[in-house]
Image (cartoon, rainbow, N blue to C red):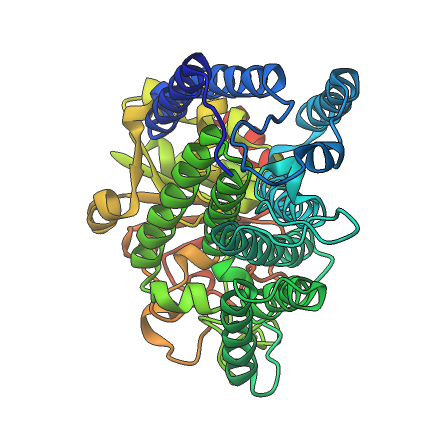
Length: 496
């Protein structure tokens, strides 16, 4: 049912939308990321305040012959105090979490936030289904007992899509969180006939959403919800740890589309704009990452990509081969004599929180005339941009940080490749071993450097994809076995 739109409300939402666009623009570069965050906060503040001011729904279209007093009596308005209290509680939880969370746990935090967005979409859809008058989506048809009989068919489509995408986002993000947090193994969980099951469940959801426009019976709505929760689980469990950064990006896109669908149900243009921006930007980022990993974008959406029976996985046996061990003094000498050193950070650096001392090491090398660069793989760490954020936190100059395609050709002319906690993204098996779960993923060609210094806790561990790295055993590789931060601190002392 249409609502009268206050022009000032529309203008406020427009300003909020512009702020969100500027936020995304700012977040596209480390140099402008802080400004982008500020624009995002301003836009969200405007949107929330505008929604609070106009939170009481009004029905302005009267149809002759219907008792709108009965309709209006069904509207349950929430007191502003309760809304503000809920916002305050959520803000306190968010602020506490943001202050306490370690950078190493940021991927898990992002996955958890995605799950909350998905759950919120499901709850809003359920509330709109149970009380459509309060959301202004009811047709002016009453049953003898005065209850609303019909929901606008267009709103049913929006509601069905919103609850489906939201439920998929929630359950999929929960599985992603458990995998990233170590509660579930990083190896793919391959269910029998999973592709047939997934296609069948997805087809059933599409059919039920279409049928929901004809029949708004409770069993239809709740079946859509249950199947969507199930398919979110089924889509994510077959995906291995090496592909998890793309999963996080794709779930981000799903959460945006769920919010946009609910924006239509709520007649809230700010939610539509925000959801569309998040959904489209997440999809674009996922597409870029899929290209960087040589993965199929369609396979990401379908789930289970990069997970085939017989692949390496976490059970891949580590070969017993000779390797060379070095010390901090060896590493300091080799790097101080080099013309160029390329540093390759990975999740091990994040775990050890070694980014600050790593920058200190680079500064000392530059003081001795060594050219230092940083090579960032698109999926280094466990979420998009993980390494970039850590290096920016340590005030590493942006002009020293290069993406894979911009620096990969330089390894062959580089004296030392200093790999600190990066395993899968430097593994040559991605280029040679068709049975490997990371086969086809572009990797950094560190093995082409004259010398490879590989910082790793021990030879017993493997990367998140669960496969051993042939670089460890090459003649030009020296293994530096220790905690990443401790090893770099010792190198800094040796440089002094």
